Image (cartoon, rainbow, N blue to C red; front, side):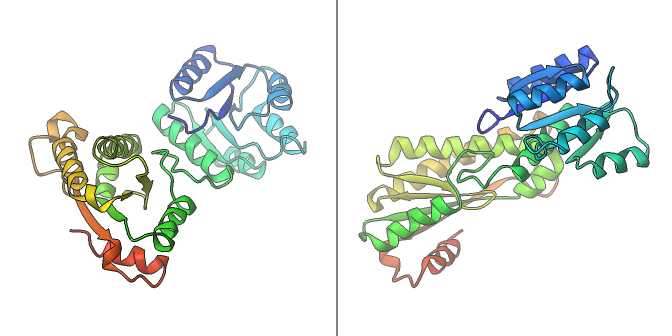
Length: 285
């Protein structure tokens, strides 16, 4: 799902393609509106300012290149990301699109899942840095550092859990970005639910890296929380695979696995935030 209701404009004169793309991205959580003519696209951008445009080159009035040219020449619309969607495959057409500042270029027929990833990546590149992970929605970066700094500066009554998912890159390479995103979201949800069931009201969960999760809890909850998370993940990891691969160990790159590291305040002193992170990472087993 899209993290925030980003708005997409679909500019496509083929009614079937426009309807399919519009319906798909709405299901993914985007706000979507579509037009069939180039002039309508320019007016729609000026009125609504979408976050991204999926733009067909072949249109009934002006072509997509002219649409892009006019959008790029207007201060209000010049920074809107554009993904060209076209039947043209010649290098000259690609070069013309890139010269006009297109962010990406796909030729028909296209894979809708690949288009989804290209849309997501374009939005990531052009959206101001977020404090939450775009896949899981969990706090990351500065928000995680802030919470850990509070641990260092506050009382000694805290404990950390670091959860690392092994062979995740190999899983993504074998089954694709869509499947790997689903795994990340599902694991984040399972960890969050375990923390809700066993942890305290002030506990914190964040994204520690692309495939790592960090929890801040109370030492009294540490053992039960660790056991709950390990049990849930151990029971669930096989179900992320297609049915044909669940009964065999011979999956590409090795099977998904989980390692959990623990750190409590009494393991200190910690010289700095980086020292704390390094010692936590060393606890993974």
